Image: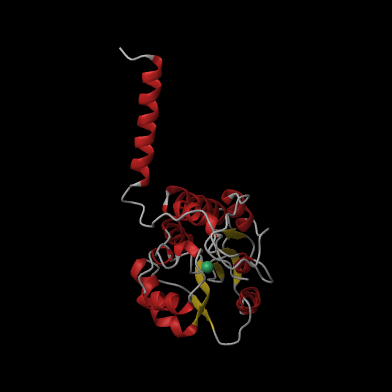
Length: 260
Ligand SMILES: [Mg+2]
């Protein structure tokens, strides 16, 4: 028979073993790092859930990288079920909204989708040890090389939504801050994962300004061309703010980078 102390010890041992097994799971592809900054200093009062919430609500702006203390937290969020569930909920709500729209059938009702972290996921790139979910400063050369590979997977909820919107009779406009020189790669990537048709794919030219300025201008041009933006979905607030934002906007999560 076990004494109460022995029972408690066994329970503790079981919990410890369970925790160790979870940490050693082969699904976690990124090595965990100590919770300290590059100079070794601790970010003692930073709560990473609070940080992520502040990011998603646009209370935190113009941040340049994920705090190193939150690298593990963001990595687990992105690779775990929560990120996918959060995306699925946005997509489900967007569909409920779209279903109730009175579409005119003249082919001018459009849905604007951003690309990166909205319809395509760069998570395989961001999970690299050299990127650390955005906790290491952005390297445009490496990121652009990844874009050229054209192997980004679809965000499942967004792809499902895209297909349903097409069935409802909405036209799709992809409006991305991705530069025009990557047109071929983006088209190849979109088609490969199931985004096979669209009304327009608008990419950023040289000198088109910040995200908000560029996207507002392009949406204004769309509306001047007779299109009605019934919905607009993006991972950055700069996809959704500014002029001609659309009848309703939908924000999908992205705690890995900020574009103003
Ligand atoms: Mg994006």
